[in-house]
Length: 162
Image (cartoon, rainbow, N blue to C red; front, side, top):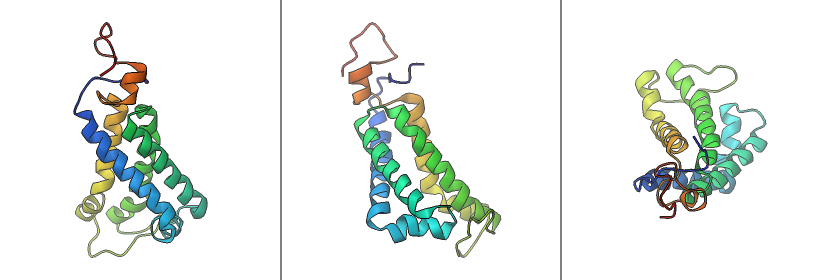
């Protein structure tokens, strides 16, 4: 598979818009409200080097969110987002499942703990993880800079521009 090329699906833009907008807005919030969404939250969770990691993750979310929205280097932009979501699930949702903090990651106060509570609290994380994995597999789709710049892995004899 050529990681630069994409398919020609027109509906992929729906996933790109949701994933791109969510990550872009979450990244911006890590800078604008650092104490609430960035370094302060990372410190409360137990993430090491919270100030550095807060801005680093926020920067990745902004940069990769913009790439996803443009459909440019879509597969490459999806990779850091997949790791961000796996880290979020491991550090914030696994303690909810277990009902206790572990390895320095704290458990926040909720009414309930366990599987149902963890699934409820992780619905956005799971959706963004699934959307990012989808984009890694499929590419940017029909309305993407990837298709214009690199072409399609489908119908190799046909013109690649939309």
